[in-house]
Length: 319
Image 1: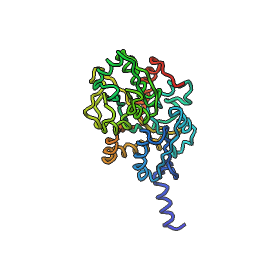
Image 2: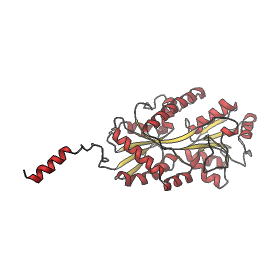
Image 3: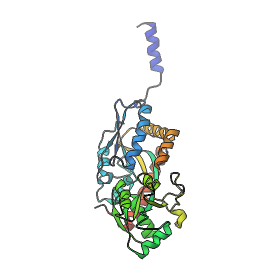
Image 4: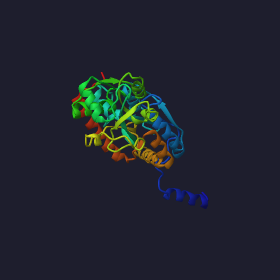
């Protein structure tokens, strides 16, 4: 053994050990989206994937696996290898479904690892102005009390459904008949006059609002949304503290090493903070919601409890 070899070997032995997961797994990363192409979760994740690919040093591929309100994708990722190559992209439905389904196939607080909260968007209550010429939430509630009204939502058990039940049935004492659609179909149903009232997340409704084809009545966040600053919140329309958000997050298979989930959390938060990403999300009606993993875990626990109570009191079921 030469002197140079001995020096190099000694330096290697003295150097700190390189963590096994310091580098990303040497394979493409799949983000399994629990909803179809064009849904808000899909749109958000495709924008995010473009930013994550260079920062992770691996191709980030978005794969849609819709069905059963997101349960099919959730169960598939729960069973995937915990090697950092696959993540689940879900919405608030991840927190709602275990209360809504007799057997969702997973426990929201146990079966997957929380990784990152991506963004949120308030829901938007809209009307077809030709079928229902109201302009305020108070006028809509009065109309619901005096005549039978249908409203379309993004689907049974979504916050666009449960939020309306919480607002109209529980808080306002006015009932409307729920008609479930898909995320995009709920907006077009209002435009076509199939239902006079709609409740959807903001992104799919925004273009039609800007075209004047549907009229926005209120947003369900605690603050007015930058994309529609002229539209009041439900809270400032007579229902203090009312909030019903659609949020989007990443989860990982159980047992995924903490170093992997922590790095993904850091890379996601870095991507969301980039000015060009913030501008892109603002234009689509998304509000970036960067949190560390502990913060997202606490938020998830609160959301599971909140929506379980709404499901219980409303009697909603997906089956």
